[in-house]
Length: 171
Image 1: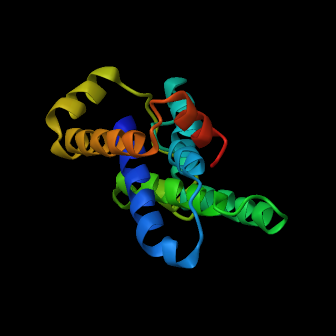
Image 2 (image 1 turned 180 degrees about the horizontal axis):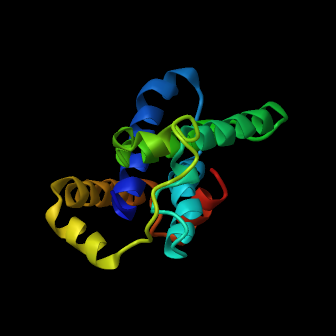
Image 3 (image 1 turned 180 degrees about the vertical axis):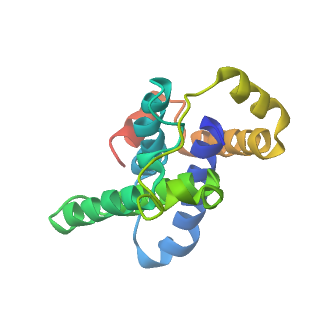
């Protein structure tokens, strides 16, 4: 899945969770951290891939990375950081790993338990475009994600200066 699929589906799932289950418990999700959590694995791995060091999925796509990030945020929240950050980061990273179907790539997901090396080979734009245009999982995910993003932007009025300011300030 690509950018809009990851982003939109992560936001859509967070919104549904926020409006259904969490509303009763009075806990809120900080959507800014859902976005950060969703993009974090790629922020780490894609530059390494572009440099030809590893494939597109490496350390940022491992369970150990997710556990370390989530545990670190849990410690920070226990020391007074705003509640909702942990839930947002966890949901973002978890959604990213699920949408990338990492169970089909156990040597990455369970690294280093199954070995210390990652698949190599940098990103290939031709392959990426071919996949986007021919794989229903990818283009379907992008369409669904874009629809969810548009709905979220409209609901939160992020197209207005005030709506965007409130979102960025965490309100």
